[in-house]
Image (cartoon, rainbow over the protein chains, first blue to last red):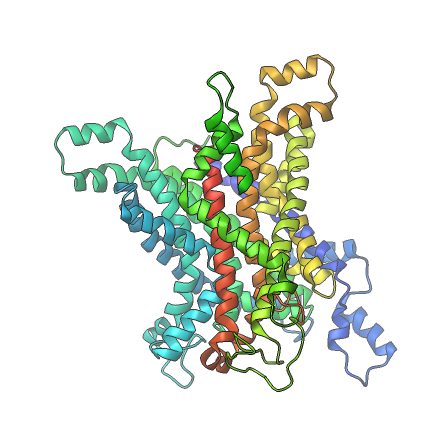
Length: 316
Length: 301
């Protein structure tokens, strides 16, 4: 197992490098000049040349990339073009809110998806199964921003139960309850699509397990159907569902870009939009790197958990 | 639709001696999936509206009514007017063109690229497969929306064509992986070996003999891909990085609703476009589900 994890970590390195090369290339092709975003009318052409040199933009792409990598190895992700602040700080302070949002959404999508998927599978082709299937498809077809706006309209503006956005009440005590109160709606909105995917997987995995011989044996022993489902089938059916958690992470991070925009949630997604609008390449590169690491780590964790849960799985 | 129905009729009318083709069987199975058939009808209606937009829409989608800014629904503007005084219903109808164009063209583009790359990786194997597969790994291990956001800005002024090109150029890896898997299974089958033994060129073996056998899952993936492309276009346009006003898109029609006043007081501005995105994406997903059941029930996508 240790060797497997080590090998996976080693494979991660070229993949992460590949992603950074890809993004560096895309960003360096951008015709929108970051200096154009920073100039004021009083700047002369000379000032712009100096500014460009200051940001290192007068050098060719590959030189800039190698320099960026060199700095990265020293733990320095560069400095924001717009504010001059260290990128590690700018991205770091946005990372926690995003992790909070996506983490809660991931838990919620499993909390919804597992029971619904199990019920749909145990009553296959019944009205309940049919409704669950339609709801699943609704979940994966709803645009996040429409769902978010609808949620704000209903729960914040009409019913006035929940806040319209932000992470804390201004001037409030900033306690845990207040944070939770702000987290519910965005996390629920982000969880919907994931819940649909989880439901589908749990249902099909459960159906597969319920058709196996040992389940028939359990039933033949005269065990109650509930016991068969709960103790015999569910445990095995959930094993392949673990891997879906790894696959959900890219979808959640992409969904967070939109959810954070709608709910004014000060996370990495919102920072992405800001940085794109300001052509703040160092910040964008850092976001790329952090996202790629999160995705790779999530996949690795899911695979390790998969092996831990299923003794039949042996990674050499 | 009528095509599918006529094929199914042909199957039923077929004499016992006539072989029933795979596609005829699939059509029969598809027609049993009621949600999929209904969804196909819904798509046909939306498609017709998009094609006949100039005939159906009461106004031009960009015409400004100087006396109606954010006007509530009325006789002249059945769904009201937006903040610039444009008719919401007309924009809604014209926006269907944007969504369907993006869905069809972007997916067509990446299906071609993905099939070519996946087929090449599996058919030639070795170093080519290794390089292509690693590229797929890299591109698949990153949230597509974020790369798409970067790439859309690369092309300068965002527009519908940028969105199509970016989605088309970046969407291929998952399809290529699917095609690669299919082709790996086909590569060593007897009929392929036979075709090669007769001296057929690589292109002929791949296009005439292998591709038709890998088409079913590609069709299913392309259908789900179209639903996804429409969602991505809507999200990009909503964020102001896709289709730009005055060109109407369901996504950019929702942008204004980020203001709480619009959200609370003018639901006619944001509910209909959101609903249209939902209906079209939902229908296409159901069609995809029906196709999957019809073409290959064992397929998990």
